[in-house]
Length: 259
Image (tube, rainbow, N blue to C red; front, side, top):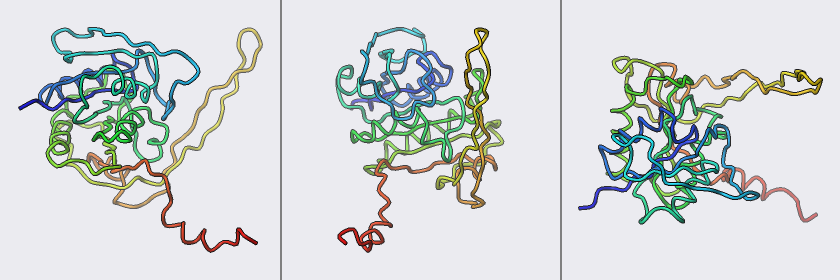
């Protein structure tokens, strides 16, 4: 029997430690092909390149521990998945895994996440997909405690299937392996960012800005991803790319648009 074909991508770039760890884990489960950005693309959301050219190159990052094939792409994470499916893969992947992201993509962060947008792009194409993030922004983060958990989640997803129209958003707490209590299926916590722009002047006297902010958790529920992570659980949130607020349709139908 053929091994499952696993498409690996990310938003931190093809040489980031997180994706290199993910490749090692996925090689234990299947045949791995990597298509990932040639540099950092964090916070790109579901952006795609429509006003510039795209470049892709087959490369070798780690001859011993790398994938069967690896391609760098000049575009966004969503571009990488589109390029993989349309141009680079010899067959449809059995699953797409994105990450491991350096930093959290829980709660409202999923909206901005390039990691999750790559997974969502695969989901739109009918491919089971998962985004993995570790709640540690350090370039030198320790991804090893997450290894067995990631392999378990991917194995279960391959065995059971992910429902159509659903993509899994998995966040892993920054903790030692023995301190991670388990996996919780959660809902996305209600939260936002209290943002401001730090205005500065360049040496030439020109104004410029840095976006800053503080994460504000507005949700006290114990069934959320933020609660799970705060209590050293891995959070798994089933997300969907159908953004329709179905529960509001009946209410809007009661409005008098025709008067």
